[in-house]
Image (cartoon, rainbow, N blue to C red; front, side, top):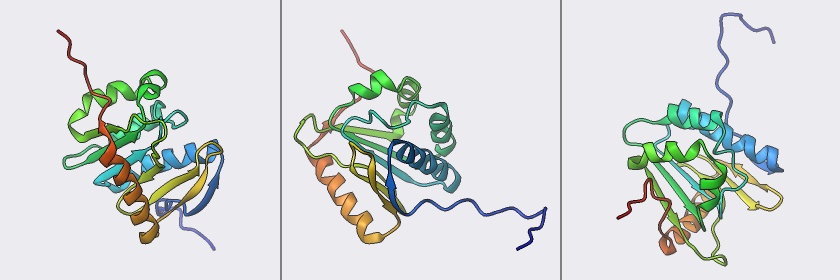
Length: 170
């Protein structure tokens, strides 16, 4: 099909279906952050036991998060613990500090507590069903999105505020 040199192609849609491997998952996170900035998502939920293999510290991820910022936005982080983010995602920590007013963080603190490894938005999700091998599914299916959000909400309820933007000392 011929194309007109003056036409612009529509932005790529978010992936749907199965994904497999760390590279595929990292690409999924990057793609979701770009889509959030481009489409102006109101809420983003990241959930993972420790975010060890998420590309949160990459320059491109921070730039996409910065582009996403606007009034009325909400970014939720849920983990078992946040020490890995503090050690491994050096660019993310100061960004989190600066935008504390739109970021909510909770940790379950329990090693046995089930924290889904997922990205959830009102229109799309990515769920790592097997975090060790980075295998999972993504898509826009309303039922799957609702079930994933219910699992995240259950972990959120047992969690406590964590990963403060600053620590106050005496």
